[in-house]
Image (cartoon, rainbow over the protein chains, first blue to last red):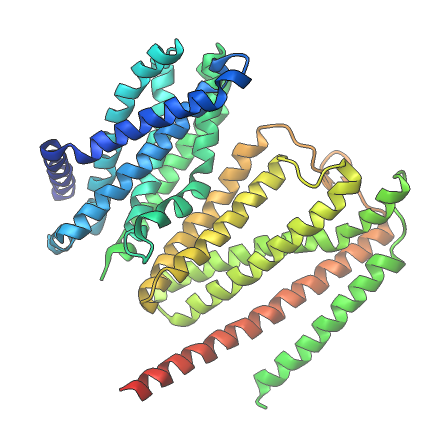
Length: 223
Length: 231
């Protein structure tokens, strides 16, 4: 019970800190929006129908904005020295992992909640059905699960934030591929049951890497 | 020279001769493949070099993961040395496989590269290796570096099967050597050349790994001595 109370406390702390400055959230959202608009210019004249590329654009925008959010979350902790405080607390190291991970997940989901209606307006393409939302949630979860532990690693290197995309993208690729594939198929009118193998793969990824992160996070943060 | 030095020297000589023998078998003794254009017939011989390289790069990656797990459990530095050395060799074999594959692809598919699933996954694996080394070079403290690299190594290796699965559910044009319905695509005499080459390459990997681990041990001894002198 103490474990989940600690997790909740960490999430609440991050939300409260973010609500005060709205730093991370605003930069994530603006970056996502800019990515979408730039990709629109990159593709529009050479692609017969924008809905062919919008799934890819959305996932790339989520990935880039997500990386920004992951970076800033841990860098702020380090700069303010509050990470030491977290480590001193008498809880399991993995509680810190889950607290940070769920906090990051929440931030990215909020950005998506604003991005997707904008996609509807800009491209006249709705990604808001519950099937779409499920697919996007599963992919975002995988992103947060792996991104959080890699962010903890990256922040402790000489290159700091720059290291995170280098570490994260190759490992995250299955999630991206699955996300684009499934979102694209849903846009084309397929049903969720026709992509059950993809869904199972992403679920396997999500669960498997969460377990691995739970087991190894302690090694990353010990002094 | 103590006993393990002697064993290593003997093995190194055997490995060198083995590779020479494999080259002879691959380029001369193995029979021509049937049913291919003249260009492709000769290029097909790259299989004796390309496939062992690819197999070894994956074996090396696996050894890196096992070394990483062992390091996290025991905190003994030699496991980290093993992981690092194997990753280096894995990177070399990955480049060798990609280069030789490209050389074969030009006459066979009329292109140097294609985004076929197996090649794409292999590129991702290459990127994982590169990321592993970038991570290591961005950290100064040896113990922390070993720990972080170990954690990343485990994630990286375990992501490869899932990456392969995800990219394979797209079309493929890579030749399928082991097809359950058709059996091995090689004739018996080609098979012997192939397995001989595979064995020679694996021995080469083992010998190089041993040399590299010893080199790493010497490097660490040097560091320790330097530190002592500085004090």
